[in-house]
Length: 110
Image (cartoon, rainbow, N blue to C red):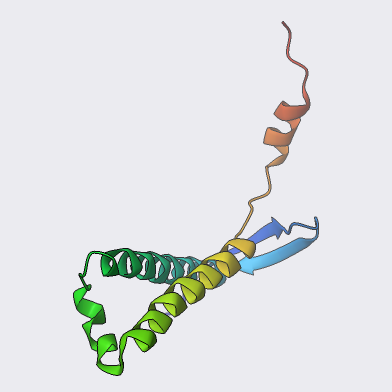
């Protein structure tokens, strides 16, 4: 059974109309989540290093030495931040419906 795809009409930052489907929205949300996790995990690992603690998932990076461990932690922060920024740049902005835009333009009595 094939499910119908949901298409949304969006406006980009330069006010051009663009059609995007629900799968693209899901991919952007996943990319944003992975970026956030990497960024936060890298920051936590850097902070914990000052207290001589290591997150359990990153114990293996110390097999190659302190310098390589720092490079990997910094890469987590940089790559995670880049993924998050790219996903935010392409984030969907829903167009207001005609009723909403008409309500915004009506003057209010004071």
